[in-house]
Image (cartoon, rainbow, N blue to C red; front, side):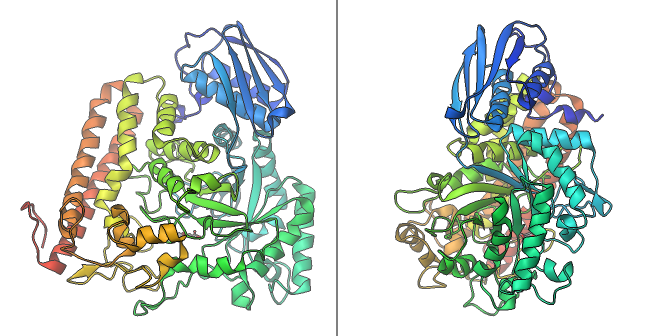
Length: 638
Ligand code: GCU
């Protein structure tokens, strides 16, 4: 077995030197949580029978919640339900592995649904996947390594994930059959994940009634279509009674949907919601709807406005088992974006916050990038003068979902340190008040428990990594300057004359799109407090200035630097910072096992090449546009 698999942030997957703390004797409520406790204690090396650990169910605590009390004289783990007990066991093992020996803890999740969407294709290839092949599909059918999939389920449950979809939201006609012909296979996946408290969601194809049902239309208002969905859902629920529901990408990026049939987004979502309603299921309806056939010469249309324009007027028209799945930013998982104005705007519609753990635009698990740092900012983002996004989690936003980053690579995530992102997602969806520092510390302490000297430098490096990546990427929130289609590496004008609605409109004098009320009017979609902040160049947070304003290259930033000089400086610094990462990593050579050391070092070298490419392409681009050299006289390629 590849040694990298030793490295999991699950303490109980990571055997190590025997802990000083004496061993334990589990007792009480028998069942899956009990078995997981026994297994976990064994894995982390507690073999002596000494302290009693009592497991108990205790409904008063509430669903999914747990309490851990006691110390060396005896410990009790109580769960509000079976899931709560399991989370209590994992919470206990994780703290024990990090050295805690006395407990008085009550913990419960903020969002009741913490979801991962896998974008796995039935071929085994993962869309935007950077960690090998699918854990669920092989060669055109469901296919998996059972032990590996159970490890994955444990890994996810240990960080509080309680729902997953495993087929791509871009559903192909074959994977559409997961709810018909392949239902027995879907059921098997549900059975593997069920003991871990994880329910299955299926991504469905909006045109299934035509593709599989032989109907002539998928029109949501057609009674035959509704009947097809109701029957199909009933069949699914007969086999998988606890299916969480269906997730739908419709009217999005060339996929058909209700609007292409002259109906509204609410008509489409309610159609699916009504089919699953009798069985307690949900319709997770994605709001990633925009015109992907824009003419770049059209300066009126502004893509970031789209989701709000389509969905906000429909507030109140969605059935109560519809949840709207909203990407955190109005663009598409860029390095930096403002939060979507749709989040928190709708009063009557339950919303989901959609994040991306897989590093599509953020380094593709070659470059180090701590998403926790970005998520902390997303949670901090104001909705009004007194409410932040974080405050809505558990209320209007009762589900946090992310696109998964794992595959069949031996270390799950391609880049060993990208596990920090999976870990952080689960922990921050559970408790959005956790800081990036806290979750990265937890992760590093669990992952490198047997290599204590490496822990602190790794924490520092990972925490810095988001800022470093941003330095050599597109400047000041403008986004998109990536290679079209695969989204890695620089191509400043790659998207500029395309149909995707993603323009920076740089010329020889200025760059950016004016999205204020004097421009495209995008800022007007926010609460007046947030609008005022973005509207004015002076109050707009500088790191996102170019998302909202069109500015000349000699615009003076608060530091006194010109915009152009800022671009040059950050791009030089980004490369130097990556060189710093490599030096830090090399200093840990003796403190880490060879395979982990070597694999991360290889990734860091790829990152250095990427950072240099970005620096040189971006700096040359702006030098050629402006003819203004770097004030510090550094080399810019002509
Ligand atoms: C991005 C990504 C696509 C994906 C889409 C989505 O555009 O590049 O691969 O299908 O998001 O969220 O549906």
